[in-house]
Length: 275
Image (cartoon, rainbow, N blue to C red; front, side, top):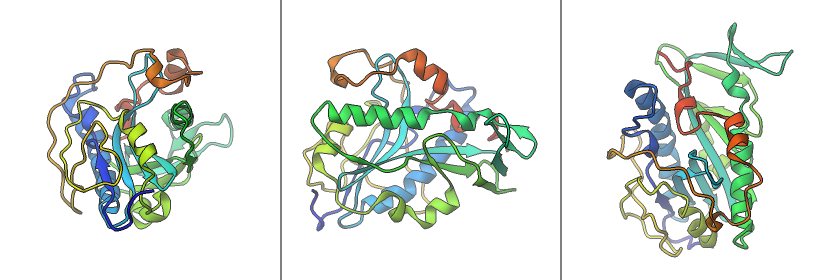
């Protein structure tokens, strides 16, 4: 495991896939989605860069050949891996419906909450590591929801999503270490997962790390209330079907499309993040 006398590490740039994203519905929508990822990153990056902290990775490609999709954040604490997905939704009370397995915000139907992206991402990452002879413990993934407006709050108490816990940004801010863990990361897990970090995310060396230097270098965590500067990046091309992903894929591009057609960022704001 890592050295408890040194800080953890931050790899990649939060919201990198949404910077200059020409594929987004609009620049405004991209900024909204990116804002949610940056707010989550401020919390977990601060945890990572404490002495003996975990390692945080931002903007990772899901290792399924032919898929251009990402995982917003991933935290490695010891041998435990926690996947985090940041969303920005319109204020309101979200709840599951009794019939039909759907969900609503007030009386408005919100089918985007029923996607199985988190299930697929977790299984793909686990298979990716196992193909490299690495065994990790996986916590239940967490969906973190921020309100798109200061004029209201988001309530998810009565909402469940497939394969993940749902927390508002406010709830997550009170239990970051308890949710993600606060131990030095297993360097083998970090080195393998760092290969999935979006190459176009610009990061800068900052904290020292006991693990072998991964391909993307680390950068300093943003201080509370600050927003890290970001550089325009292009949307990465879909990952080719190659042995780099081991023998993982039981999922196909068609499977992923059925699970969540817009996970590269569109569903961060869906139509429900409008102020």
